Image (cartoon, rainbow, N blue to C red; front, side, top):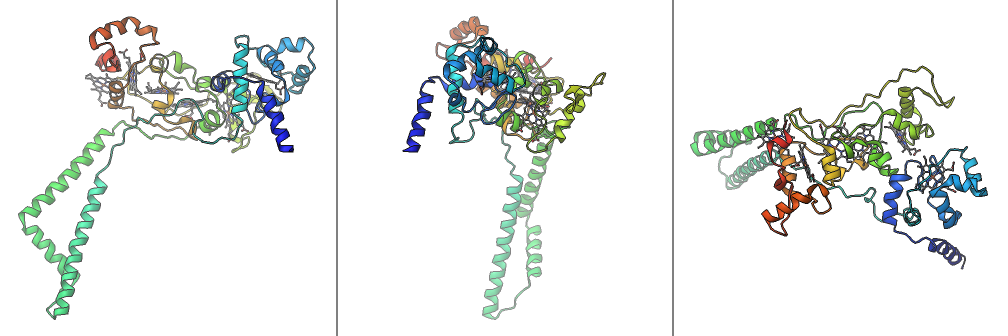
Length: 402
Ligand code: HEC
Ligand code: HEC
Ligand code: HEC
Ligand code: HEC
Ligand code: HEC
Ligand code: HEC
């Protein structure tokens, strides 16, 4: 009875929230996740069960403009403001009432125990890394098995001879006879030479092709910064730190100032305590004890080691792929949100770029950039044709080479 009563009262609270949790998740990640977590206090309170302690009406007012609510003299609003030492949560005049409902629906949905792992951030990673099968090991193993079988047969023959009382030979004698006959037989000799030559050439080719290919490159970084913790567990949007990727050629690495947005408050981590976060303070000159910046401090930028790097002869533009092309970061960079330390997921070779351009359809429909071109392409390839990047010129040398 008690459980039912609790369940009923919770569902009664939840019922007044009608919203689209999926849309809410996106809004939450872009607007709120930098300060709020669902299950833990961060810069602001945990929002997981906020709908159980506040009414929907109050929440709408607070989230859209908390200052207005405070100025109206609302006691709850004043109390929570005081509890957080007067830190100011920004107003969100751009959010509609329905948007807020969606966010609240997500805070309920997102706090339910997870059934299936893996949907941590939007967009499932698509594997594009090519798997270059290595046959050399297989060949060696096969040769080994063959040799073993031949020797085994010889031993069996020997045992049979022994039973019949005929003269027998030792293992080394067998092996000697075997090599001598093999080397005298021109056919076996030819086959052997060809096999060795093929293995050698294959190794040489693989070696040459991997010059400058740094797939899997995972250098140690000056601060043990974890994407798994930030982008995965805390669901901080990639663009919060790499804001350059959507608008420009390069995706920036955030400065230590960006880290300070959160780490002014978060002075301790779950794994390394204060040790690693102290390095951010060292970079910007922040004294956590005094809770203030040190005066006249010469900043020491963090020297991150660059992982992805195309040679100078190639041109690659992030905004073109992320904003115009609508690709997820994970398509090229792999499951970054699960990486404790970042490594290069894709090969970044010319073949890798070209393959994707051959296979990927351009999203022409919703793309103003292609409106005019689309009409022409339709005439050329037919009404229902799939327009790949190749068709818009994505294989032309000049597009990727200066
Ligand atoms: C810059 C940091 C920041 C951002 C961004 C932010 N908040 Fe807050 N939020 C706070 C702080 C700090 C408080 C504590 C009250 C105060 O100090 O004003 C708070 C309080 C709240 C409360 C009241 C919780 C309670 O227990 O009563 C709600 C609800 C809330 N925020 C929702 C949101 C939502 C939804 C968003 C995104 C649309 C958001 N916040 C974005 C910092 C932030
Ligand atoms: C809190 C800030 C932050 C967030 C959020 C974040 N990153 Fe990063 N990212 C960094 C920092 C700092 C580095 C440099 C250190 C390193 O390599 O770990 C970096 C490095 C990278 C690199 C390697 C850059 C190189 O040197 O080639 C890639 C790729 C990357 N991030 C992608 C992503 C993606 C994709 C997401 C979202 C899933 C994301 N990041 C979210 C801060 C962030
Ligand atoms: C939007 C907020 C936010 C930003 C920006 C941010 N962090 Fe964090 N960081 C967190 C949170 C949340 C934690 C985990 C705290 C916890 O769980 O106790 C954390 C933890 C850490 C830890 C501790 C890890 C451990 O396991 O001990 C390090 C180191 C760290 N961050 C480095 C950085 C660096 C470097 C940057 C800037 C490139 C950065 N953070 C930017 C929110 C942020
Ligand atoms: C089409 C594949 C592709 C997509 C999608 C993509 N990247 Fe990259 N990324 C690359 C390549 C290639 C490089 C190396 C660029 C260079 O050396 O000029 C790179 C480099 C980077 C770097 C290192 C700094 C730089 O610009 O050289 C960061 C950080 C990064 N990417 C983050 C992101 C984030 C965040 C997203 C999603 C918003 C993203 N990338 C989407 C292919 C991609
Ligand atoms: C995961 C798939 C994918 C990979 C990998 C990829 N691209 Fe692209 N690329 C696209 C898509 C999709 C577009 C079309 C974007 C648009 O709508 O403008 C595009 C467009 C381009 C364009 C503009 C073409 C034109 O005609 O306007 C250039 C240049 C380009 N890519 C270079 C590269 C380079 C260089 C690499 C490798 C380092 C690369 N791309 C890897 C998917 C990819
Ligand atoms: C979609 C982008 C793209 C297109 C189109 C493209 N390339 Fe490349 N190319 C690259 C990238 C990226 C590299 C660097 C890859 C690496 O270092 O492995 C490269 C490397 C090269 C190299 C240096 C050799 C090497 O392996 O380092 C030559 C030569 C070259 N390309 C010629 C061409 C010619 C000729 C064409 C036109 C038929 C062409 N490329 C079209 C992206 C492209």
